[in-house]
Image (cartoon, rainbow, N blue to C red):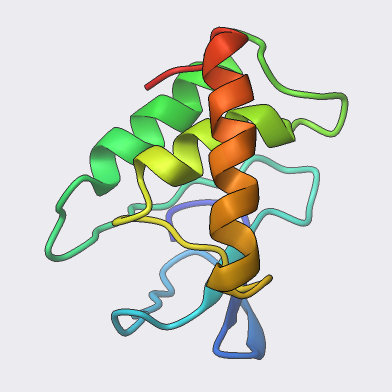
Length: 119
């Protein structure tokens, strides 16, 4: 962490990260990281092996830059349908189970692509 505070939940355990702290997340471990505060947070994120992780984050950042997010500041279900199917090798939902999520995301992805969301 460089500045601010991030909250991380890794394998069910939650903790706060402040400047100077680091966090290692083992491969395939369910995790969430967010900024719960109102102060901007800055961190260095490294993924090894990198694979297409950088492309995933650049695509999501483009949604924010283009203003294609909802009032909550998050992309909507159609955008997530597109990006979660395109980058399923990079990013997976921890819940609901894949048997439920994949067909739903496929349908949302088709509609989302038709509405102009794309990678």
